[in-house]
Amino acid sequence: MAKTVNGGFDYVIVGAGSAGCVLANRLTLDREVKVLLLEAGGTATGLFKDMPMAFPKYVLRRDLNWNFESEPEPYLGGRKVEIPRGKGFGGSSMINGMVYARGHRLDYDDWERRGLPGWGYAGVLPYFKKSENSWLGENRYHGAGGELDIVVPATNMLYEEIRAATLAAGYPATSDYHGDESEGFQRSEMTVRRGRRASAARAFLQPALRRRNLAVHARALACRVVFDGLRATGVEYLKDGRRSVARADREVILAGGVYGSAQLLMLSGIGPARSLEHHVIKPLADLPGVGQNLVEHPFLFAGWNVRPGAFSSELRADRAARWVLQWALRGKGLFATNGAAGNLFIRTDKALDRPDMQFTCMAGEVSARELWFPLFGKRPAHTLGVGVSMIKQDSRGEMWLRSADPRDPPRIQFNLFKERSDMDRAIRGLKALRDIYGREPLRGLVAEEIAPGGNVASDADLEQFVRATGAITQHAVGTCKMGGARDEFAVVDEALKVRGVEALRVVDASVMPDVPGGNTNAPAIMIAEKGADMIRGRATLGVAG
Image (tube, rainbow, N blue to C red; front, side):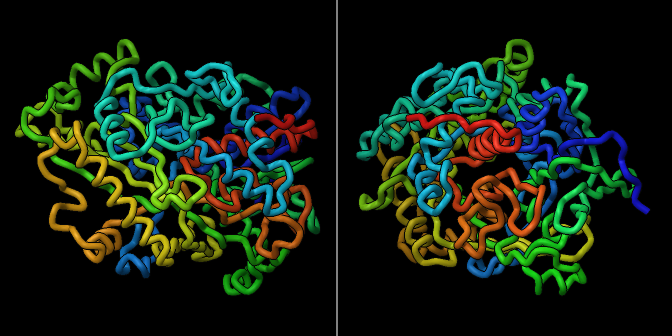
């Protein structure tokens, strides 16, 4: 039998990821409000857990991960795709690449045009600024003094060379891709504080842990939302082999992410009725949109071997000991970065009104695995790598329950490259990237293309490469999407309240109706900032920009 947790909580938050950490911080600013935060994982451990350059080692560490994988993808030759999702305090901000890129302003204006007042660019910009402590300081587009440090690399990492080749290929550069010029090449912005990873747990949760009105339960797996009629009154969870119920006098708030929140809604009887009945779950609210509208940025890797002696590489593996020492003592140097020289946002079709491709340009292989074989044996050949993210796509996926057991992972299907338009976009993007890396001064540095490879020449060859290697960027959104009253697939309204029930909200990346053209950690934090004001009954921040 489940045991009721005592304490008289006003709010129970499920999930201590990027959104949950922000909510825990903001809601407990009201001293009379008591909050319980439930997290299925624990605290990140390891010598290099805070080292930015170490993220390739951590992104797939099984004890910090939900270890999801997709169903066989029908448009990728039946391959299953790995789905890294952080499990622990900070969620995916604990293991991600720390890139700070909000997306284009028109992405948010599209939300408002879909019947979501207050979610246009003017309505969300103040909440982006609220969190920021930007390297650019306080200005029209950026905030200073917020909890989240935004910095750029202090080392060159071929930034000037990549920038010059970009300009030679006819693409612009920009001093701020969040400002007036949102297209072009710029130094990569990172969520890093004094050389350490600035996860949401470090930035938002740690300062709030000193407050007596915040309780936190680690390794507590949420099983279902508890209802009294149609009103959410608590959360049943599993901890140390025992089921308990945490009561919420005001609201239950789901911040479990794009997969966790949708799964928990379905386990609680909220979702497509026929699918729930298949798992012998009694439907409470028939919401066909739960688990639908899954959107992800497809990802490809491109890389080149560098000519021997072409330049003195900062990324030589035999210098790793020096880099580690510099990072450990001073929080500086190459290991205080994520290895990205910059991000390039381009339109692969000039008829588009915003960029549809993001190139994360690395002065090394994107995986950076060579850095972790530092001192012995033959030194690996140095490479230049680019993470190719398709930040606009037309294909949609879905997720659904595997069983009624909350310990079972959900079933996830992305349908990557289902739509022909997405494949055409990927081919255009790879051609554009080849053009850039075929220009001086990069042309004089590279010896050969290793991915897609010099023998991958025709459009048909490129398509085969995409279907054989295509993956995801870990930017999934949409499974509990916001929508207006006329949207039959909307799960929450513009106040993030779940339709058909009371005292239940979803506040995380799952509510985004479409994925912004950037990285999703920043907008997830913004949603939590704006959602916290809604929950607290405060006037939302005014129109800006």
